[in-house]
Image (cartoon, rainbow, N blue to C red):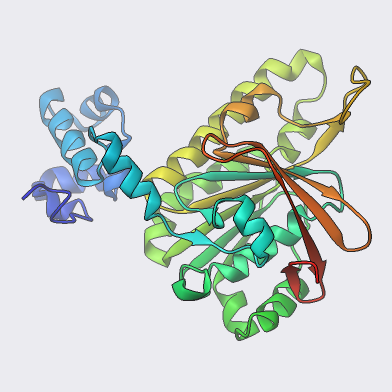
Length: 318
């Protein structure tokens, strides 16, 4: 039986000696995931342990997490069985291939008032629903970079799905990111927090706000994009290694060079085009209606869906 079949979930179960285990913990490597993505040369040097020993340990951790070669059929079966979180709208769930997927970054971008934050609030509630109702029976982490989080909406949405509002709010771990460095540091902290707190969803609302404010102008563009790229890779690693759904929001900016079609584009440029698994543009429509359009997803067709934002949350139009 292979390690992955035996479901090894901790460093202790790898059979690492107490001495090496202690050294790894002193370095902040306390989980299989952290060991799997560690740099072997750095680790060998810092811990004064021979490189082949470290490489073997990292290889064992990767095997245990299923990060070795797989057949295309195995990948198909794995992806087909991935749980999804309902948005509260069957139309939007259908557009997303059944809901917001774990092990994936889903980006919602659009102008102010298009429903990005409302969707984030709804997902932070819905992830707590039982699996048969479209949830994961897990908690959410909400990283707020723009001060848009509202407990009142969480309360109303919790009531809307028949959950105890206080219990729902207790299961959402909130942090206000004060700048881009803090935002990135919070993601690093999640490597310990996710397994400990049974997290199923990580929300970053919005992902680009601080980067844009701190690195304005063309002269800072390269630095901003490099840093944003690092942040997105952090989030991708988090989604894939810890089996969580990562949802990010993004604003749009006007493109004066576009004369036909949509003159807006998501902030972040080409870096964002390559990172998220699913990119969804949100637009205002009449009244409380919103239009969601798949802009980029390797496994989904380009299409649109209409949903509404009501007093009790995200729903289908009547």
